[in-house]
Amino acid sequence: MRPTPKLTRGPIATTLLMFALPTLGSSMLQSANGSIDAVWIGRLLGETALAATTNGNILMFLLTSFVFGFGMAATILIGQAIGRGDLTGAREVVGTVIGTFVPLAVLISAGGWLLAPHLLGLLGTPAESLDFARDFLRVIFLAMPALLMQTLLMMALRGAGDALTPLVFMALAVALDVVLNPVFILGLGPAPEMGIAGSAFATAVANYASLGAMLLYIYGRDLPLRLRGAEWAYLRPRASVLRLIFAKGTPMGVQMIVVSSAALTMLSLVNREGVDTTAAFGATQQLWTYIQMPAMALGAAVSAMAAQNIGAGNWARVGRITGWGVVFNLVMTGGWLRR
Image (cartoon, rainbow, N blue to C red):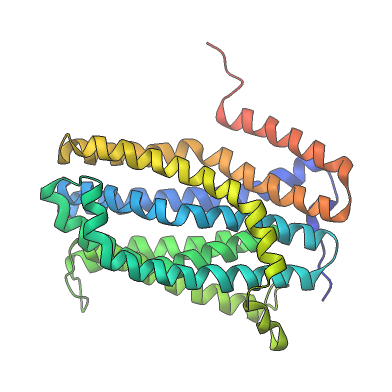
């Protein structure tokens, strides 16, 4: 099947906006999920538990942020391959990134389980929420392989010009997580009462279920990036592809590490003020995710669209794509407003 690069044709502004909106929708759902989970935890378990999730989530962000930089690099490489009509090249990138970083996620998950108390101690987690944070973080680490693989697949699909499929399965994960949170926290029906670990367990179940459903959909619909037969060999990382991923992904990964390290430093200072302050800081972090969503969604859309046009050799469109991205960003974030 020869790929059809949808992002290399048509009016740039309309194409970019229609591609960015599902990506923005996915980001909004993900942020809303975090907010709703925080509401469940705060109402059912109190502010001590809410402060614990703040510490756990910041640590998870640090441990996964570097990999997201390489995911963006894979998005760019897949977009370029799709743009030049090289479906085999796109599948090689998918195989290499999954074959490299999913096993890495399993190792981080196992290490995180063992080191969770030590990591929380380094953050200066308030003593009264330390047990909550340990239980939450250990179970969240179990979700890391599914969460990371699903994220990488969604980024790959966007690189291939499909922003709608990631939105659908993000909605599925969020719906399951929201519904299952009180079930496992309180032990409703046949479910065990797990307290704060139940919230993390709900997240793990939701992500594994959504990942399984997305894989069934990808293969059931025979989407271009699926691997079959001899293509499974692409899961063995190729040195040439890895070099490109690391060359493009390392600067983005380092940037994410710097941002997450700053957040960790801030949280370690906030933790000194006690549980109430940490819980309040967590609430403000939820708000901040909504503020930065439009810029991040547009950035992802511009990257994928520009990559396809670079692959197709449409350099004249690349500059205009960037220009429209800046315009939409200013409009959506209110950057054009003056006092």
